[in-house]
Length: 123
Image 1: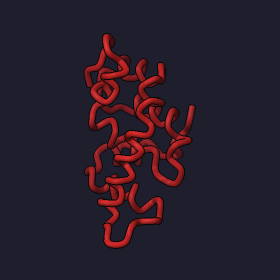
Image 2 (image 1 turned 90 degrees about the horizontal axis):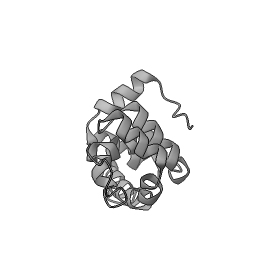
Image 3 (image 1 turned 180 degrees about the horizontal axis):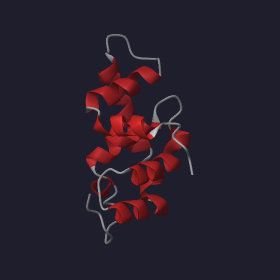
Image 4 (image 1 turned 45 degrees about the vertical axis):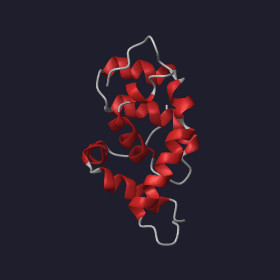
């Protein structure tokens, strides 16, 4: 399983951070922001593109679905680790933890509803 190279305290801080802070971290991490865009706006675009690109990999993962069903919450360290493990290869240059927190806040059950039809999809 992938390690996030993040302490428990830092992970908790990320899980409690406002969306704009997480988006800014994503926007700054790539270091190639478009002219005239601030880090939050750039992060929002990167996040939206990656969110679409990794959906199949996340939602087809038995580990992610099992973690979601096991935790019964929309966001937990176990679920975050399962998602991060699946998508690490897609996230060159950005924080997997920040991306995962944003994604899990949306609700993994809804995000994967079309792949998980007929199974537990609550957040």
